[in-house]
Amino acid sequence: MKTFLILIALFSFSLKAQLFDMKAQAEISFEEFEMLVPKAAHIIMGEYHDDLVIQVGQKTIIESVVSKRTTDFTLSWEFLNFPDQSTIDQSLLSLKNKSLSDADFMKVFYPGGQYQNYLAPISTLKTYEGNLIGINAPRTWKRLITKDGLANLDPKYLPPNMELGTPNYEERFYAALGGGGHAPNETLVRYYEAQCYTDSVMAWQSEQNSSDLNFVMVGSFHSDYGDGMVEQLKKITNREVITIKVVNKNNYTEDQLTTLKSEHPKYGLIADYLYIAQ
Image 1 (cartoon, rainbow, N blue to C red):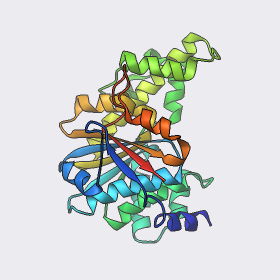
Image 2: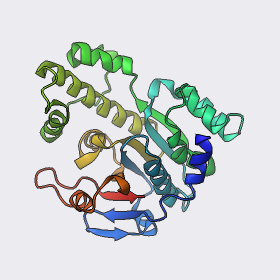
Image 3: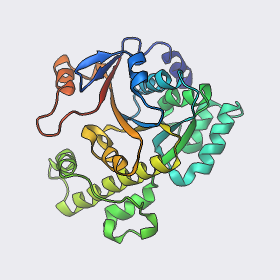
Image 4: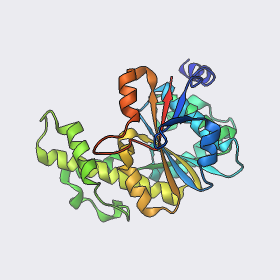
């Protein structure tokens, strides 16, 4: 039933969406946006997870670009792990040839049926013949960091570009997780190391395994203010890196949206573009 509702939503959401150019401080059309995207680019779509309005917005972003082009493209997803790429490829092929249903495709990776909202952006892979890549590291590897620290992680699990984030990123991370004083500082340090490890892994996998035109779905903290994964990716790619923060307008007041569009006095613009879906 939920899959059916998602399919209905594909035709009803994003009709009133706004794409806002943060540098120009002006709304632009998707036609204008498509013309600004080069042939080779990473388009980072920072999200709040598992919100159908946002996932349909990501679908719209992908379609606005790839529907005008004949080049290959990839969709990189934080919720899939790169060691599972063979299973991802086989499952996507079965989805495309209709030997696997949409719901069953998602159950290959999430047997409990979670995250079916992401069938919206994944549907573009069938329509426009894109490929799907996993870019995250398994949780078992990251648990080794949160337990014993990054210095004790087996080097075979480290990406070549591994490094910690910027001081601003560290400050925002501790403010988000440490404000309540609910964990010892040493524990927070290990969680920050695991966060930066995830950024480095996702950047490396996105660059190494994607087509020239690559769309990335990640949690917005990994991409806000050009930090996290975005900062790491820019260091290792020759492609343009474009960031779009995708939000559900229903979760914000008008004042909050105005603040979101404005430049932060310390951290700068939250993204290159703001996609406000409803």
